[in-house]
Image 1: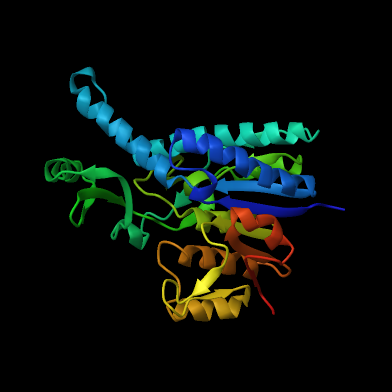
Image 2: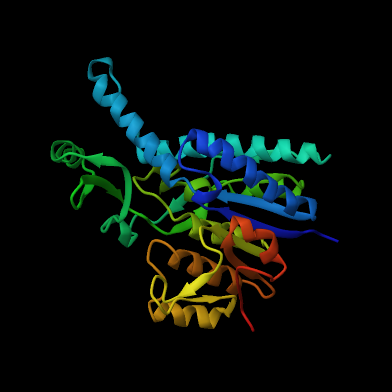
Length: 315
């Protein structure tokens, strides 16, 4: 009998925001993932990278600014994304391997630097919205714009670079991911939404963009024919009327209900909305699937229907 397959999408809380925090957070996260593996789930992992890619982008720009005469150049966003995948993946695979060995389980854990194809005509390239990096002065912002980058004012603080957030079209390394999963290995891939790339003949060119991690998680889950998509975030439940006195947690909903809630404007554009959209798209691609949105602390309870928000095609 084949194992049930789950894609676990890790949010910021599962990783921390800097190197010391990440080390501590990953040790706890690894225990949660190991619980699923011990319960005989086949696990594929996607992780966020917003604080990390911002830190890398800032560090590379500072290096360039402070060593102008030594030939340093700013790192493109695609390179910053690759760097974040590498060092977050390193901590995750090391932590998961260690936790499994403590339990007497040996399974290889691999991180795949993953490129994700995006559409060059995606509307987001004309309307960038994702904020990254540190707060800049007006002079620094002017320099960014002179390089062809977009910046936006942060009221009362300064300026910040903004980049596009195109939708994922396809995962370039999907065959390698499938091969490792078929060998019953644990795979960490599509970190931070993947390295966004544009197809130019036989060449892939890095795009100045950041892809929504949740949308890529849904795409990966469809591509590997997963049974469950679990999106781990900072809240235990999806809620309606979020942040108001009428806030209402939801333990379950159908895909039709989810789409109606989207139409009514219940979910924030850069927060809960992509999680719901990814879940609906994943579930509708094949019967018998479900998606769960919850916190890391409630992950195991949610798989048994005792916590979190579960989305299915039927009640």
